[in-house]
Length: 394
Image (cartoon, rainbow, N blue to C red; front, side, top):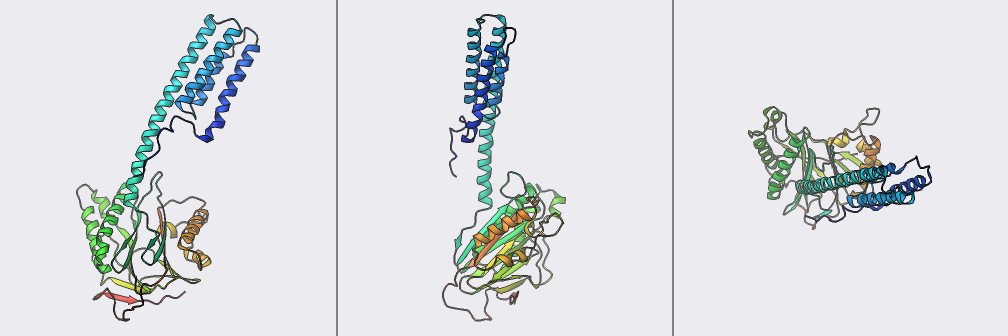
């Protein structure tokens, strides 16, 4: 865990130094005006404004300094006007000291609360990063970029999820979307991510991997700590992708999730499955054999995986975000990083910043095919399963 810098809480941020001039000018102006005013006019009580104003943006140390300057200014007024020991100036001085002390105490309390909140946020961010680990930029023969935005304020993870696991023969990807929001969605996302990282490297056939993930999530949903009604309505749509190093193709198992998009040159194609598989966590057997679709994935091709937070974002007229259409205008030489950044900016502009759902995106480009050895067309690791090889057209 990265250490957070300490010792800076007592100093105003550089951007606040301009604000320090305001209480200083107030002290100087009130002092001069009070000295020049008639004897029956007393402006000294207005000096309390200076430390009170400083407390709104400055540290306790700075507030104490401004309060001290205000006291010095009030004493200077009393000396110049020969009224040091009058009851009027004594009451003014006492009031200024009391108010300055309270503002300093307020600043100390605020700084302590801020330090505690910063520590809690630091721990929370570290925990969230452990759950939703950043994807590596390079893994095997792939160049990967990703983006994530949680809908909840101050959160770095929501109900959307993604992960990448390196296997002995390639790379496996997962992207998913937990039904629902809040802490229960985060809990389900964390559970599925952990189960995927634990099982994906074993190179189970994708249907067997999905079955194991489903069993793990269902076990969690049936625990006594979970609300029965909420558990009955919980499930996770997902896409499992296997990208072998030695073959220019990819195997895709779609569990009720938005279809991935493949960019080949200037063409964009939706990788719609021949048959959707049951979402994870429903505990229902598939209607038939899980269908694993195999699509071409050549060097230079880019695969875009996303959640419905992208495809179901609406503009002011209620129109869904046209991701495939947008990708068509950006395809070509754009790197995965550039592509993800372009989608992110365009998505925010499309909805005028009013994103209401979690958003997760992955762009994967195959750089090369490792080795020259190719398996026969009828050989595939998903032996004994329903495998459909799908050409991809525009």
